[in-house]
Image 1: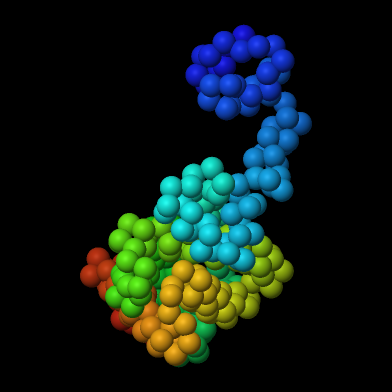
Image 2: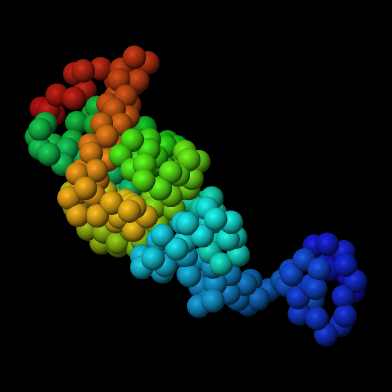
Length: 259
């Protein structure tokens, strides 16, 4: 038989193609071998996904600098890792939409509860969640470019750094988010603030492992990094209701407390 991927002739005792390395599939697909393929691909102890997930907790500098240096087989590449994160987060958004009537979007209590305006902003955010999440990557890259120049990463390499960091934060927060939305969605608005804080902390941890700055120098620079990213973050957040007002989808009265 020939390899189905590269058409190279194969010996009958081969399990993998000697030319392209693809696994040889001889039987028709069944639920059993489909499940085995999924678990083998993503949850095997020697699998690149699981190894990437664990090492981004313990040694993120090894994963990130390895990819930047040209290592491609040991860890999952940042685009694939981000793709998994976006897939999982889309399920979280689905649960948020289903439980939106129970979630209080006015987490600071400035309006005495969720208003029609806040609900419409939340719905817009749900619809474009993936695009907004991806937008955070260049925002962090810009802030990192300004604050941390010791390693001389170029801008694309900084995009790789924060692609890994944000994707990892998203994947790590997936199970807690799902559990909260399924069991007690009423507190999700407040927990979202906790998750955002964890995103900041993990970004700072990643920078710490990659940077030569330590002590006071690191603290001062990472605080500036947080400030610069937060300015961009809130700028984007404010742009959403502004856009909805300009397009006539909401008006200022929609943000007044419900009677």
